[in-house]
Image (cartoon, rainbow, N blue to C red):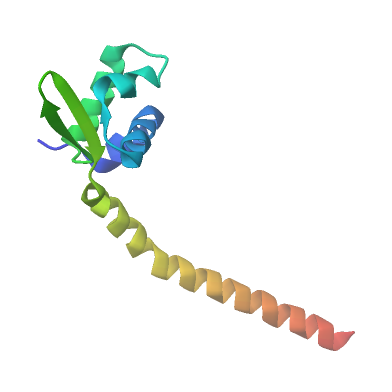
Length: 109
């Protein structure tokens, strides 16, 4: 069962891990060195990102390399994109009301 992308991104350290592997592919050890928590804690964060489909793992001998999967963020992007048109319409209406009320105030002076 895949982990919900939003659940995975809710934790700040997981977002940090995702940002690290979005820059470039990194080993598990490299990722763990960037945090002041146990390797096991970092490993758990990595597993959750894997389960959510946000990162992928590549094995090279005993090393495990991780990199971001941009397509894993499609669900987040679709959610945000769906919210923009109504939010922008409300912002436009508010700006037009403010502009119109300012213009009426200027006409009185």
